[in-house]
Amino acid sequence: MVAEVQGIVSLEKGAPVSLETMLVPDPGPGEARVAVKACGVCHTDLHYREGGITDDYPFFLGHEAAGIVESVGPDVTKIAPGDFVILNWRAICGDCRACDRGRPWYCFATHNATQKMSLADGTELSPALGIGAFAELTLVAAGQATKVDSRARPEAAGLLGCGVMAGIGAAINTGGVGRGDSVAVIGCGGVGSGSIVGSALAGAGTIIAVDIDDRKLEWAEGFGATHTINSRNEDPVERIREITGGNGADVVVEAIGLPETYEQAFYARDLAGVVVLVGVPTPDMKIELPFIEVFGRGGALKSSWYGDCLPERDFPMLIDLYLQGRLDLDGFVSETIGVGEVEDAFHRMERGEVLRSVVVFD
Ligand SMILES: NC(=O)c1ccc[n+]([C@@H]2O[C@H](COP(=O)([O-])OP(=O)(O)OC[C@H]3O[C@@H](n4cnc5c(N)ncnc54)[C@H](O)[C@@H]3O)[C@@H](O)[C@H]2O)c1
Ligand SMILES: [Zn+2]
Ligand SMILES: [Zn+2]
Image (cartoon, rainbow, N blue to C red; front, side, top):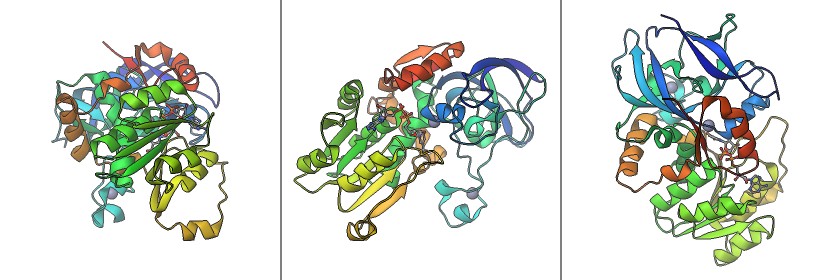
C-alpha cells in the first residue's frame, strides 16, 4: 500500500525547507522500503536547497541514513525485512564501462528506485542523491541499502552513508594515505573530520587540521589531528610547510569546495604529492593556477566522489571497526533533533556550531 508520511522538502531555490506530506509507494522489482531510524544533516542537503546541484525542485532532502528494511519487492535477494541497513548512493550496476573495467567505485550508472515518491498532489519529488531520508519511510533501489551489524547506533551508523565515508575514503581510497604519510585536511566539518579519522586509521604520521573555526579544530584533535591551524589567524600554506620540514604534505584534502582553499591545497602539498578535492564547488566557480606549477609540482590532482567507496565492501568493515572501538563515529553526532528542525540545523551548520545534527525517528 502507498504510505503517507511527513518528510522534509525543498520546494524552491533558497527558501526555507518545510515538512510536507508525501507518498511512498510499495517496493516494486529490485526496490526496498526502509523505515529510517536516523538521518544526518549534510552540507550537500543545503547545496540542494540553494540550487547548487540541479534545478529539479521539489527535492526530498536527507541522505545520510540508517534504518530497518520494512519490505522488499520481487527479485530482491541480498536484504530482507528486519535487516539493519545503511543507505548509500552508490548501488553499482555491474554493467557500465567503469564496472566492466573493474573499477566499480566509479560506476557511471548507479541504481536508484524506479518508482517516484511524490507530494500529496502527485508532484514527483527529486530525492537528494537518489535517496531522500528526512522521513520515517523511504523507497530506494535494494542495492542502496547495505546490511551491517545491528548493534551499531543508527545515529552514528547513518553518517557512513555519506559525509564521513566520503571523508575517510577521500584520504584512504583516493589519496592513498598510508603509514607514516603527512596529511593536511582543509575544512574540518563532517567530511574533513572523516578524512582526519581515516588518516589516523591508515597510520599517517602527521595529520594537520585547517579550519577557520576553533571549535572544529578542537574536535579535530579528538579525531587524531596532530597539529591544528586556524587559517583566519595564520597562512595555512606557510604553516603546513613549516610543520612538514619545509616540504608540504604528502596528501592534502580539500573538504570545503572553494577556489581559495583549493589553491591553498595546491600549494601546501609536497612535490609529487596528491591533492584530493572532496568538497563540492558550485557551478559558477572558477580556478586559475600557473600552468607551469601544475606541471612542475608533479603528483596528482584528484577528485573524490563519495570517497571512492564501495558500500558493500566498506560499510560492514567500518561498522565492525566502530563496534571494536577503533573508529569514533559517535564523536560526529553533535546533537539529535526532530524531523521538523532541519532548517534550524542548517543554520547551526552555517554558524559552525555542529559537526552533524542527526534527525532521529522513534
Ligand atoms: N565528494 C563527495 O562525495 C562529498 C560527499 C559529501 C559532502 N561533500 C561536500 O563536502 C563539503 C563539506 O561538507 P560538510 O558536510 O563537512 O560541511 P560542513 O559545513 O560541516 O564543513 C565545512 C567546514 O569548512 C570550514 N570552512 C569554511 N570556509 C573555510 C575556509 N575559507 N577555510 C577553512 N575552513 C573553512 C567550516 O568552518 C566547516 O568546518 C561540502 O561541499 C559537501 O557538499 C562531498
Ligand atoms: Zn556500473
Ligand atoms: Zn552528504
